[in-house]
Length: 257
Length: 314
Image (cartoon, rainbow over all chains, first blue to last red; front, side):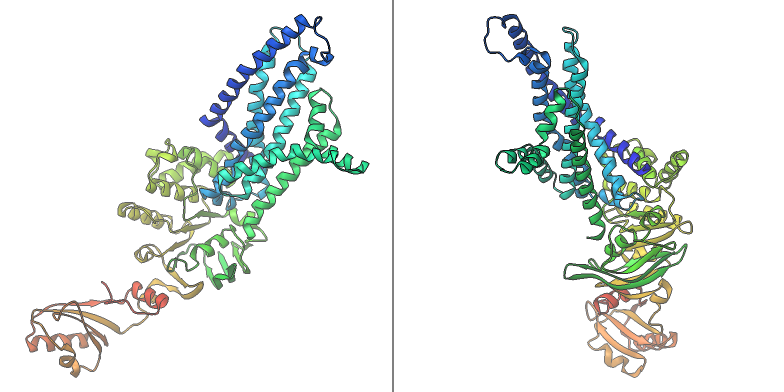
């Protein structure tokens, strides 16, 4: 386990002491600084005029739905494209630059390597989610917020970021070409949203349930509304464990291939 | 210290190494010699636990490389062909990281890093980004990472490739300095390197061991045979017939011009003496007579390419 910590520390430093990461954070904050005030403004207009408007869904009058959830969906979209950029170097670049030799000839297990890198990637995702969280946080100066659902919603998106990180880490382990790793990662990140569509075409009740359970959006939508369901947590963690396991197998395979 | 038996590795249909068996004792410095593509790197990768063989076993310090890879890796310092350095790290920071990876106790890391930096003369660049270092310095950082955990076994894969002559000399001195404290396996296709640093040589060709012995006994393998280079003042059209009377002469070959000849002979100093006196009495104007030792290079070429060296270079 000390191997995991050593690699985790090194990779975390590699993220947070690297200008690229801060450029990404800056660009994300540029996007939110543009979108978030507009959303907030629209929301305040809606509130002042809502008596005159017919047919506005009542939940849109709640700042959690009206502003924060929209921000979260933008954040999710950004994560789909940004997390692969962070994780693509973790294995692909090491293989290409032959620094992977060092890890494979050090007294650490494949699991140490994968876990160290995975938690570092998740730690980097935390930074991105934190940047996004600054916006609702600053809103609290203007309005009274209900903190619990807000925190749960951000924890939900952080978990989804963890799922992306696991899938993208696996993608990175498959190739030594960082561009290929990036493309494969985005495909993974997008396809996990499309699995749920299967629920609309299968006839049997059981099949529909399976697809619904496998859909990321089902579980995320519960979390962003502020409800924690254990089946959702189990789903997220099992996807993370599955892809970490697959990545571990790939790393291990380089020893006997 | 290192035991290898029946080691075989197939890359698809191509057999990279074929039933290698050898052993290295504690404290030995062994040169692993062979032409490019002979299977040197493959063998080293297997010993370090980097990859598994198709058949056979290898063990380091009594631990099997596959049953107990962690124990083996704790005892090995490995410099691959490309030094495994991270361009975005500082030299000192990188060495600290490697020391931690190799499970050096926390309170000793600084001491070990200092030691490795001192041994490889990296003091002046220790606070620089590896990205900004020249190839020679990167190679030295590579060596520093191999020795930073003070391993019992050092495995160096072509440690001097791509360095300038001064750096090569420095690295050789470093390897000599490490002698005794570590068991060292050194792979190379540069012969003087082996002669300068190793006591024992394993010559490998097309995946097989073709010779395994001490340098001294390899170099004197064909004792009693020697070659003389002769330079004359006058052109001699047929030196062979002149020397026909000396029975110990096995062959006479023409050199660059009719003034230069090389003579192979089986025998000692008395034969050399009779040849020289013969040439002098014939009045050819003997300018130079040098014995060319059959050195490691000849042995190497003979074993790996199945031919003798052209002219037995001195």
